[in-house]
Amino acid sequence: MSYPILISMLMQQLVGITDVIYLGRLGEVELGASALGSTYFLTIFMVAFGFSLGAQILMARCNGAAEYERIGAVFYQGCGFLLAFWMLIVVLSWFISPLLLKSLIANDAVCQATLEYINWRIWGLAGASIIVMGRGFFVAITRTYVLSIVSLIMVLSNIILNYVMIFGKFGFPAMGIAGAALASDLSEIMAVSFLVVYLCKRVNIAKYGFNKLTLFDFKLLKRILNVSVWTMLQQFISVSAWFLFFIAIEHLGERELAVSNVVRSLSSFPYVFINALSATVSSITANLIGKGLTDEVMPAVRRVMRLCGVIVFPFLIFMVLAAYPLLRIYTDNQALIQASIPAYLVMLSAFVPLVPAWILYNAVSGTGNTRYAMKIEFFSMFIYIFHVFAVILYFKLPLAVCWTADWVYNVAILIMSYRYMHSTKWRYKKI
Image (cartoon, rainbow, N blue to C red; front, side, top):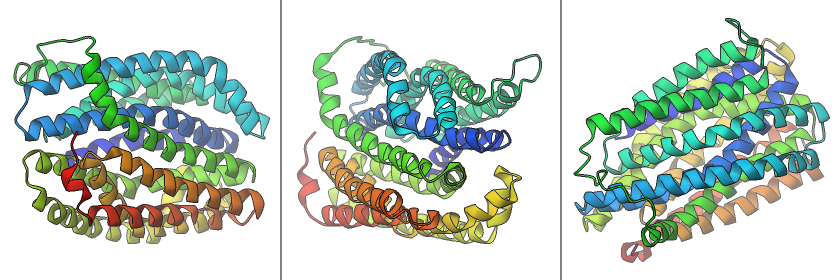
């Protein structure tokens, strides 16, 4: 189950990574602005992603209980809700984003570049929302190999379109940072097109209830929201804290912001392994509970945790040894590379507590108690943000020390998730 999810997540991360690699050739302003712009968009997108996780849990429960025909109704309601959410966000972003970003970003050049990115990127929320709902469906029914194909289409088209639109090739105008945003939007449209065709041609439409289109079922939507509202809040809080982290770093200078964007981009490589296995844990937990096999949940969680450690820790060692060549991919600026190494090493060390923390945390979500999962996220983010503002804005410590915020967050998640999963409360959760 995890392997296709891993490939799909890796491909999705490569979309952002190629943006950073291309923009690193334009300058530090564009490199820093892409960090703020992409994280700002991601903060909004994660609300949609959080909704899809709640829908995924319900679809997995239906799959585990062999109530297959109910899955299509959940999927349709999810897509309808997210498309309505996208239209609302497009309107709000047009008026609110300039005021918000100008009040938060100190450097005018970085602010203008960030706005230029956002004004194009926000249109891609529609395609991204359909993709995450499709991902939720295939993860719920444990048929995940198609996600690899969807993501491969997206990343290959994004690499080509980035080259064409950022630098102005084959007769297209050079759009710079706006070209990176538009390339991502178009690559998502291509991925959605393939996903729709695959669903129509290769999935048993009648079995999963896709032949019964229900546009509005407020009772079902309310049930989805009862589960997903907490994952929506949790995902929003999680990534908004990342956005605040980059806003705080921006006040240290353009160099520090550019370094942090490179370091964040490299962190996505080990993270995709952890996230893929964690997504599987959430689905396995929901399926086992749906089948009444609660005694098998924690043994499955521990096996996935061991597997994740075996995969991730050797990869982290490789990334430490290959620090310079990896950083060299992003920029030719030797001063920028040397400035990145301390923060890069601190970032890699924070994956040690993240492995058990994220596996256990996704198991909490898989039990259906998304409200408690949100409480874990909220408490951890409170500590994280306090640490960020104290270290960066008050004491103004070196950038490597600023990146210890990841340690603070990961340890807090680990402690609270461990306590919940080793209790008996989750066994009796009804959704």
